[in-house]
Image (cartoon, rainbow, N blue to C red; front, side, top):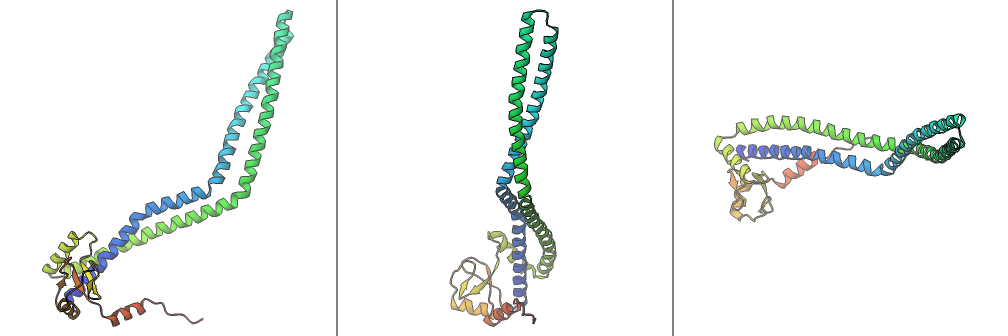
Length: 253
């Protein structure tokens, strides 16, 4: 195969890998949001218990404050009762003290209910604490993996960028300009495509037998008559070799 064509293929493979890496990184914020949303959905019942407990605690504090105020009211009524100078003042103090104590009794009943609700919610939360911890640990692990992926892929993008510049700089000016022009014009950025089954693998247009024969020889840079991409051919035996190279050999036990 012509050396320039090999360089163009290498350049295309590098650019394709860089685009995929960038797409992965751009998708990570959305994936993080999905993981966090999944945790929120799975922890919905637990969050409902926490909300119920917090509301009960808030109401408990309000009731305790009101009971305190009503006790002060009852104490004040008792003082007025002791210092009353006539029947009218005496009866008014009696009514005030009775009303305060009745209100206190009602508030204490409600307070007891709230305290029971708090205890019940706390017990349920304690029972489900291992479940929450497991879900949180799982979420944090998945987020950590995304952070590691971002770091690893960012490093690879930097390395691939250096590799790309080296390949691009080694191309003849005319070939570099052709590649750049095609890449800029085509939306997917694929300027170099494989000719497969007598067709362009990018636009799927059939190739004339003479054109396919020239592509097989690989002595010239041939472009697709339909999409104008640069075409190349990979022999079947080369594909088989490359495929076998990607298979990890079994390790004897």
